[in-house]
Every structure is written in C-alpha cells, then in structure tokens.
Image 1 (cartoon, rainbow, N blue to C red):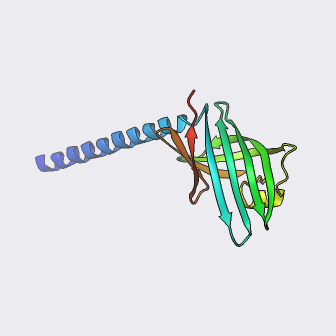
Image 2 (cartoon, rainbow, N blue to C red):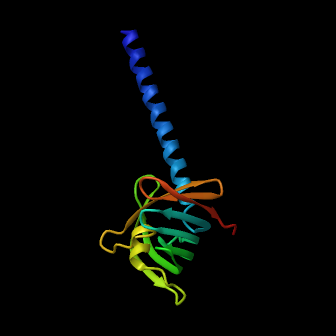
Image 3 (cartoon, rainbow, N blue to C red):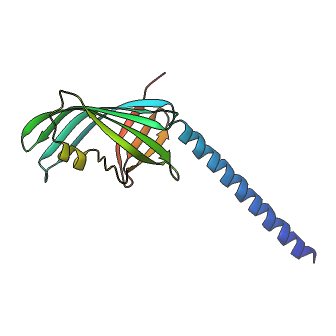
Amino acid sequence: MKLKNKKIIISLLVALIIVILATLWILTLQEKTQRLFGSDCSATLSMRDKSARFAANLNIYLNMREDRTGYLDMTGTVNSGGVDERAARSYSFDYALQSGNTLHLTNIVLDKRAADTANDGLMDKLIFSIDSRTGRYVKIAAFNNAWAIGNLYSPLFVCVINAS
C-alpha cells in the first residue's frame, strides 16, 4: 500500500513540475511577444527572382503600435524585366496576435507616394500582398535587439529595433 502511495505522490510531483515549467515557458513567450508592441525597427531587404526577372533593394521601417495597429514603409529600387523603377510606399494595418509569434494583419491599406513607379501587381505578388479579404499572416520572433520577420514558412529579413 505504501509503495502505491509513493507512486501516486511521485506522479503528482512530476505533473506539478511539468505544469510549473509550462507556465514559465508561456510567461517567457508572452514577455517576448509584448516587446513587439510599441516598438519600431529598420532593415534592408534585397531579393532576386530570376524566373520573374525581378530584383529589389528596399529600406524598410516597421512600427508596431500598442493599439494593435502597425505601419510598414518601403523605399528603394525595383528592377522588373530590366527596367528600373522606384518603390516609395507604405502600408497601414491592424494586427491580432495568433498562437505563438504569428500575427494576422487585416485592414491593410496601401499608400503610394508620388515618386513610386513600381508595378503594383508585381509588388503585391513578390513583396507584400494586401489581399483585403483574408489579410496576411506574418511571424515576428523577438531576440536581443532585433526581430526576425517572415511569412509562415521562412524568415525574410532581420529588423533592428530602433533605440528609444
């Protein structure tokens, strides 16, 4: 009988330890996620797509506000089919935190400056899609003084958090 009680007590202790560790892990994840809100960062993005005859060199600024809205600004050069164009556009959006470090962007609004001559269809297809029906999912992982930002499958760039 005493052996059975010891097994029950050991099982309860193991379960308690697992619950404590899971709670600590969740709190740590929430702390890292909270660093997203009210911060901004800057990055440089260079990409090439030979099959589409597309290249881009963009400076990016991202601001994630505490009120669950965000702002993404892109400026730089885009080459499509051997023709150089200028990208000078910004996107405003609402975001909601999904599981882990996944954000769902909705109500995405594009604002093009007068200097922007980049092809909208190509930018939408290869850089940043603004499908107003479904929104867009992105992953943002915080580490040290930077964010790794990407789609659901892979990181796209590292964005250095600007000092306040």
